[in-house]
Length: 124
Image (cartoon, rainbow, N blue to C red):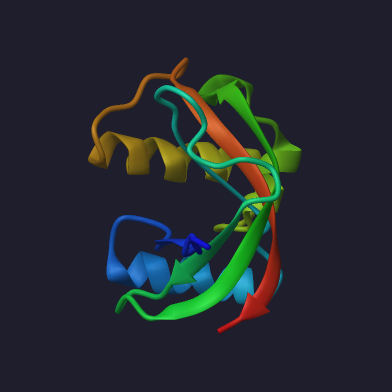
């Protein structure tokens, strides 16, 4: 029998951001995330993943509840609020994510994103 280990990842693009976003997951504030799309979605509904802290230590297991492709400029206030970051407003989400995508390879208002909703399954 082959056992497939869970995929591991950290949120964000720095150890400080990974820790901050993980804290939001652990306290129940962050229940969604997004990333620049390319090809098929890298996760599927029901998939579980290990979330690492900024030092690479496993801290949580999340499960994908839904995933959809959306353009950056069509992300709505409900999704922005579920991401749990900043003041949780759509304007704040757009400003923060524009800066993030600009730092990490480029931004366009019509860029395609994978928008995922998840639940916290367990703390590690």
